[in-house]
Length: 374
Picture 1 (cartoon, rainbow, N blue to C red):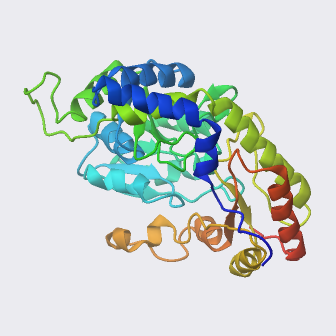
Picture 2 (spheres, helix red, strand yellow):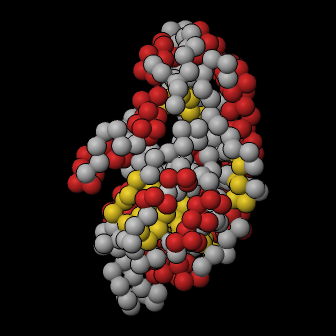
Picture 3 (tube, rainbow, N blue to C red):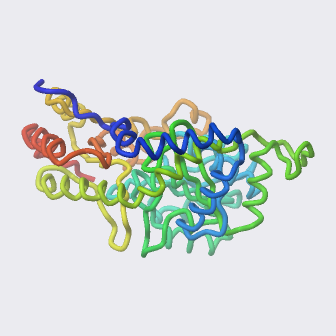
């Protein structure tokens, strides 16, 4: 292998590009001595609410808790069912299980990797209380169709926006379509903290008020607790860091899309590239290919100095944690095929054009002529 590995992600480059701003923000918090629920948290909440087009945003300690507390605020619990995708990170179904509800999986659209809205209604039962779509890889799920289904059946909608901050459908940002949206600020995300962090968005005052209480041990007034809550506050230091990064987010999204379109233009004849739905904007948290012999391609790219990653190698319905749900291999053919075929390429704003061309060259040399069929 010639030269060093091109990493799947390089957060140090991003830090160095905004080092003076980040260092000043951290120093300001340390000098101020206010570390929980300070002005940076409140201001970031206002900024994210305005950005997503929602009335409220509530800072939390993770995207997982944003999902969990959204479901709790909707009084979803034991005996209830929540429809979601089997092809995503376990936090999605984990949050459903944490409130005592049961995840009901619906297969994905093989073009987008998102839940197939055409299959949702057949999964609805008298126990169904909500639909939890995931905007996977930064690609918006079909929210107008999902909102229509939910309205017809009286169901709540919670959007898993962990990978998709800034993504839009018809110019409307994700996190504003449903009753609530859940965002992650895990360091690798398009807007990432230097530790864990999350945010819930909603235009419903009852949900915002309940989540604010739940994140602080179930109390609206200090040392007065109305229900069992959790300790899930976004800390002031991470909020200050995120506010610095937030000012750069649109520029970073544009750069990600530039990389993605360059990849697609060069590779579209050889490899099945990501699908962008007309009228939607994909923000490319990941640039994810589909190929028949994924493992061989991953090894070839590694030998050429290109780092890649598989998101995700085992769909949720086949995870051991969900054995009791009774799903079996073959039930969701598109999710299972995706798990065998997906491979994500280096994707971050600071990737330079030369590195991008190196990735493309390595892919073309690998001779990946076979396109995965669905």
